[in-house]
Length: 164
Image 1: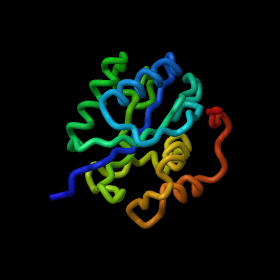
Image 2: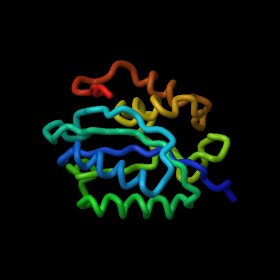
Image 3: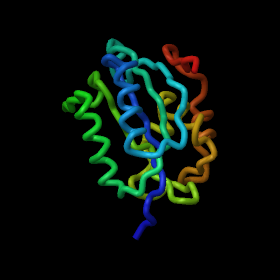
């Protein structure tokens, strides 16, 4: 049996009424969980559909002892409360998307369940805000989140970190 999670590294993203929805989602999460850290907001082109509106993304590190399945259900309820409609198109525009990038134990090590989110090592919009607040976390395979973000290379056109 895996140890219980102590913290979750989350990624919030929106490209519909993006500023307001990102702030509303962060506020709801802050009411329900202890927020340990939150990154600056990043803007990036939509993955998979360059014609879609650009996204705003932010990482948050929250304390929660909820089991991964219960945490995922709670995050889906927050998305639903903000008008998120899930479709077969994984790249569809959305009011809010809240992903668990990884669950951490009390020592700050990633837990095997849920697995580390694939976007953490594949996309700047996930890796850069996550590295800002949890860069020292060592991922399976021995690299840190900060090293994974750096390994992605230069940021793509359309990506920028917004001033705090």
